[in-house]
Length: 556
Image (tube, rainbow, N blue to C red; front, side, top):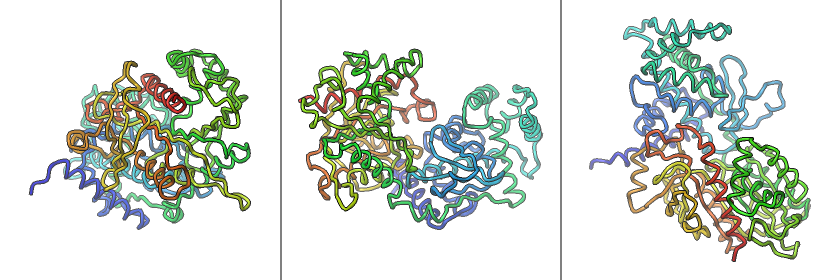
């Protein structure tokens, strides 16, 4: 029987995760050794869209490289040893943490050879970083091959690149165009492509220059091949002990519940919203503080704040919010998920947003618990702990959770960036776990705002960086009729159904509101996550979903 490309790709994803789990439990591996080669071959078979020209034997993938470097600690390409650790006390040391802008985590450069990377978001985060590192090692092998002849002799292009990198390190002025010409041969790309990539890397706040990254990736590959200086990835014993035991999720959830108890809010109706931390704050309090009367006015204020054209409005809204029920709870647990409380009883107005009235009795007014985006399996860990009753001094405090609302970013299979997806079910990729549910939000709620809206099944994937065209086309065109892919939906729903229907920790008729906005279309060339962020195009979908969640919760 001949397997389809989609079947081969799904088998490759399964091999990747089985291999990663085995290596994690083992404690260490050499990425260019036998074990690492298994990961490399599986990733090559899969050929994810986000990694572009990964399978090309000569060409370096530039957009994928920038995407990865923005999510890894600066300087990791220079390190022979990468060690993934739990939160183990390094934050109290003299070491300066390195925090990647697109994946908030503390990383520590011990010396020229070793990089420690804190992993506190669970297995999904570990698998994600291992996939990115595997991509780097594949590219480093190409750099080595492009810089040496079949007998292993170093090319003049490599020697010139080495000279340029030395000058750059000393702070000497470079002839960038000449350096780019040599670099283009080593990367197998045109001069035009190379110059454009050099500019993109120069604009990144996180990565070193493209010259330095290519040089050090190639240097380590050459030293490993010619001198036997192996690279290694390892996992600390503490990390292996803690993963899967909700250590950080419990700390995170207990801080929120402690704050609810301290402020005597624990017995009030509670609405949980997973979203970014500015949209709920701005939507509610721009109406309260500035008297805004329509969604369009809220959107305009949000746009002005985003581009800092009228930043005083943002400060005015926050100052007002802090006096009228808003409590900020920055993360202290290691989850990297900030949280907020909003006590509507402290608001001056009876309307939450225009036309949406709150209960007149302040004792019955709801409390919002707003949490930032979780990452993959972390969504289950945090929600599972948050929905449990809180115990203190021998007393148990159950939460009266009325609703859970999830606004997320997702890859869309129809339409483009900024369009909306309204799920009717979450299907967990690679498992038999399917979660149909009644979504209070409907496609019709979002009509008339100039955005594409698609309703149907959402695929919860094991990793966004592992999706390819064949798998996504299968999900879209088969009877699954998927409209998008994301990483958290099934995990949230697993926790909610467990808490409401099995453990009876929360009411069984809890309201569910899910909607996603498209951060990318992985089926369109040039529209994957590696093509860049949404920017200002994300304001309308983000605030529209937030507005509709608040509208739907309190409109009978």
